Length: 80
Image 1: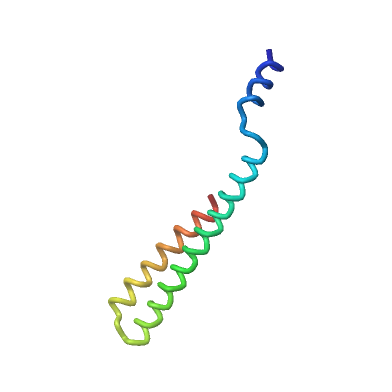
Image 2 (image 1 turned 90 degrees about the vertical axis):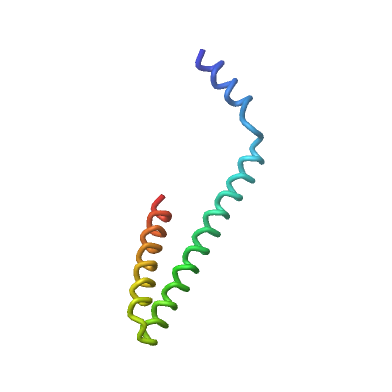
């Protein structure tokens, strides 16, 4: 019974090359998403620093909140 189940599962699986292609695509997507979020985080930080230098306290506070929220989400993404 167990052997027959394993044979059936193996027959239903796609060829090995498809697994490798899917892994490469998924792994590349994870790296790309991480780079995009890190880039967004850096842009928000630059905005925060520019608002601080300009003396725009309310905009600085908003950008600080956005940076903290993005950092939290990025940390959760990396942990996942």
